[in-house]
Amino acid sequence: MMDLKVDEEEVDSGQPVSIQAFASSSTLHGISHIFSYERLSLKRVVWALCFMGSLALLALVCTNRIQYYFLYPHVTKLDEVAATRLTFPAVTFCNLNEFRFSRVTKNDLYHAGELLALLNNRYEIPDTQTADEKQLEILQDKANFRNFKPKPFNMLEFYDRAGHDIREMLLSCFFRGEQCSPEDFKVVFTRYGKCYTFNAGQDGKPRLITMKGGTGNGLEIMLDIQQDEYLPVWGETDETSFEAGIKVQIHSQDEPPLIDQLGFGVAPGFQTFVSCQEQRLIYLPPPWGDCKATTGDSEFYDTYSITACRIDCETRYLVENCNCRMVHMPGDAPYCTPEHRSMCTERSSSTSPKCLPRPLPRGWQRWAAGGAAWRAADWGTAEGLWPGHGVGPCDGVGLRHSVRPHHGVGPSHGVGPRHDVRPCHSVGPHCPVTAWPPYPKTPGNLGFPPCSPQNSHPGGEKHKESIWAAIGAPTSIRGQV
Image (cartoon, rainbow, N blue to C red; front, side, top):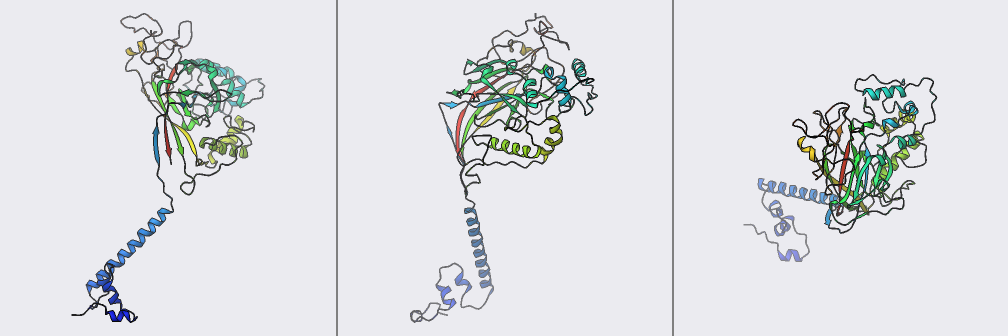
């Protein structure tokens, strides 16, 4: 039997030790089986392959871990904080109809008729069978441009004059149980035209505070969407929509609204609850994140936000390429005319660069909103649900709408479809009030006016399409990303 032990005298003499002697005394697993005094055998080959495979796997794992380390991974941490005092967010809403039909003049139709799809490029009314006879008659009279001399036209003035007026839309408003008025809403222009913001925190007005959550501690508004003023729609464009209702966005006062992308639709005929939550995020600086440490110079906004950065980018691009800006864009460049929009603006919007802003590695605030909506179970239930116009909130809850029959068509994009036929009654939240109108009950009549295409209120006033909105006071959540 061969002695595998190393001679102590050989080691002490300083002579090199053989590989077999080193392997036999090494604690590295498998070495002693590979480098042995035995002749080459299958056993030694198998041990050699296993050893090399393990060594390769070790190198692969080490390389992977080193690469992962230089990715600078981080942990996202969220903590929910119960706040006893929170700033109520800004609430912006827009009517899906940008221009009131009665406010569109002959001069407006001459300049913007094609933009609104009311006229074709030959200044003629499109051949359509869906138009209301009365609207079509008025439109034909306005579209008669014989001997007409056009006057100067300004898009901002057109949006402001023809857009829906909050003084006519707002039927009732309460914040934390106290009445509010149209003066508490600030006009703001978005892609939906003339919109209104509650609690904007501008013009010297302080930001409103809420002490606790719940619908009774938030904003409650009842709006008349003035559907009888909606433009006739023969084809959907950027300025017209097939839907009827409003669009709402809940956002910070330091952030401009981007309601066409971040807003949610509210349809008539539904009772809707909206809850919101304040989220404060702290983004990590490089190398743990790709957030910028500094912002680019902006001549439009003092406070950085993703929305502001995007609007800033789109405005600069449009001014550089078209020498004009849209009505909702900041700055002092001239407003784009309808001719500009058809020739340059629409083409530029399809080829504009992607604006991908990054938030700052500091505290950033955003609002998350959620809601639920339902409609009345049957028409009989509707009798005791809907109070007369101008009635205050019912226990601070709900979203009151007058119901427009859908005729088998479901809502589109969160809002109700438009129809020419109007219902003869309305629905809202359960309230101990008398339903309007006070028509006498009979075995075949639930107290609502008889249905007819020309149905109107007593005195000839048209039936109004209304929305009651309740936005609950927020809760707070903070996180580090």
